[in-house]
Image (cartoon, rainbow, N blue to C red):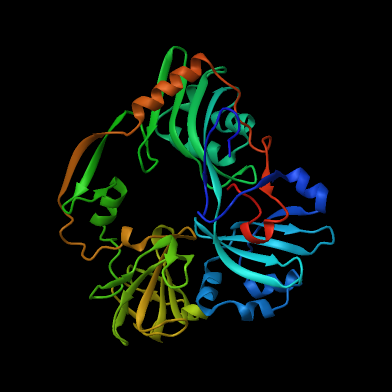
Length: 433
């Protein structure tokens, strides 16, 4: 499908999906349906959600036991979409779990029976260019020009240590190249800024983004590597020196399944997320706190069986599932390496193992990017200068934009797409995210 004029677009979708789109206005006028955007509430549980939508709880009983544990991955504050008919009945709900998959609840048109599934999120990813004159301050001016608050917040962070915004004058110029995921014509998630520029008088100051999105004043940057060849940031080095490295949850490591936002199940032949790492181990093997923290949960959690959750500094929460016996108590302060439970196979489990999850600011992340087997051996560091990929190309784009500025894309003013009536039961509310 072609993107909007002036935008490079890339639609991501499951290979089996055949997308046929109509505008939202047509959908609403033909069958009186309306889409509602909501946020998952703190402490809200899926059974209560079904009751509030007058959905029989028999649906919960029909959900596969393997899939029930994903109900625990719905995060408070998560944006989700619902489709209602003119009588106020829920036709479909799409509730994200992670970045690639979503829970889908659908009312079958013929029988009126509700079904449950977990399906890939289909979204569009567009590149945008914006040239914005300074009238008040960068944050307000970006909001006025693009109606994208997350872009305004991101540029604030970009300029924080690179541009003295107190010295900006009216009609100084910003230029930004960024990509944004979209769903139902609205920005979803944080944009990825490729380059930003502030022009004051005749002086142009460019700020480039490296592959991690970190702003850099130059098209080259110095990267520090530890003795194992892994890149480390200054903040990570400070944590290493303070001995705040996350350790492993077991003394002997054997990984049986890795983290994935969207993993193809070889037996079920369908996509499912795996928002953690599985460690194979014998029943009764001690489970170790990966860092100092406070136990915020100790008990049973559906398909995860017996679970311990620990809150750590820096917005991290660790999860230890399928335990045979819990040793920690809610509210307890624990030290790194302290035993908090024992390996088991409680809940939905085919055998003894540890499902270990790690979350930062309520988002599941790959634990293996953070966990370290040992804090020793990381004391020596090597710094190298590397060139930021795409810096030269993006700078040329900005210079061209300044010569021939186009109309800035304003979110909420563009087209909104949705599926046809025949497809809404199987492929979701929209072909874009």
